[in-house]
Length: 96
Image 1: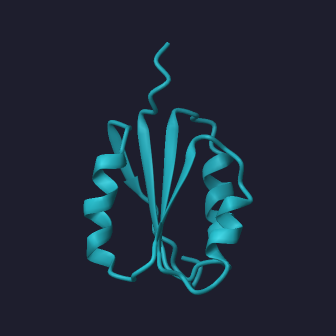
Image 2: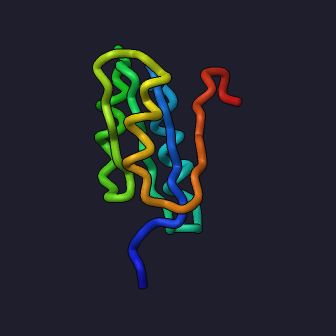
């Protein structure tokens, strides 16, 4: 069986330390297991990186940017995708 994930879950984040843990937990709790999660931290100033790095799962990849420039994320992201289906999981600060 091929170990390549079918689904790539892309989660851009900026100062979402309060929310990113629940976001990751929601992905980990899925019954479908052929996925990778790529979290792109766009120069957060909070504890986002600390929260993400607490999760030890080889399917979760973390990319940290030092300069906040959201549009440039995409040029860094697409060469890193492995899955054949892409899902953008956006964190909304109001919980919706």
